[in-house]
Length: 319
Image (cartoon, rainbow, N blue to C red; front, top):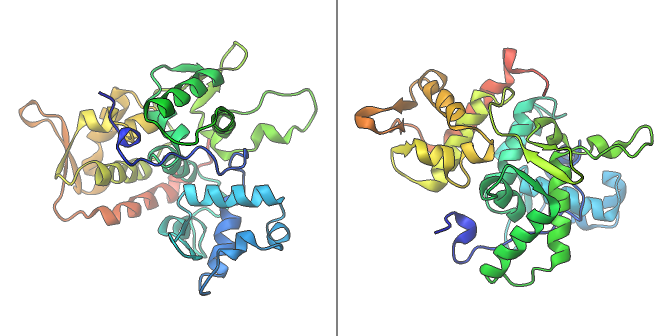
């Protein structure tokens, strides 16, 4: 039986909102700054809706909507349901605030955090399904479209048009894969999405063929991995232990979202005691492979672990 949030009753699919534009450099910072500057107002959603938003952000109307979509999806800003309020988030402040670690998205930790936000939670259907449920390492756009369309039909999701799914899949691919050179010099589209730098998906020989790149991720820091582990844990279980199987294979887990092999996951879990100062501990007692969480560690403090990826030697550019 299929498991995971997208198979649960009441799940709300999302296959649009980006206006077909993948995330671009500078967008998250621009959205954060606009919201932060207006946070004291009773209603500030207008920063993305008013006629002067085009001039403020320096992009077209559809791109303004896309910028807002990506900032919300990446958990940089948050919209209050039923109101016209938008606020900055703890992650947004940590990355883009006045003393933010990475206002220009120069460090791999930031890219990994954004990818985690997009693919680890089921809010963005295509992202979550592709990284957590797609059954093969190679794919083309048509296979992804058919898979999501079949899922929508099986789950009886309302108002899922084939064109919408095709546009969402096209945007998904462009988020992670550089566009093929068109022959013109200076093709801006080739580097339009910062997440291309993660190398999670590569084009393969055949036309429109792609491959998920599973294996070690040298630019994925221990801090982001620990944060992702705790973020996943908080949604998966309130238990003091979490099994290796869940961490490596459960939909929405670090193993799935970061495309790590079992050996890669095991290597990282073996270092948890040292990395977290004993807050998390790897255990193989009585044949049970699991992580043990210290009773004093609260899930709300998970984001603090990413700090270690922005200090000293960790401040390397994404490879």
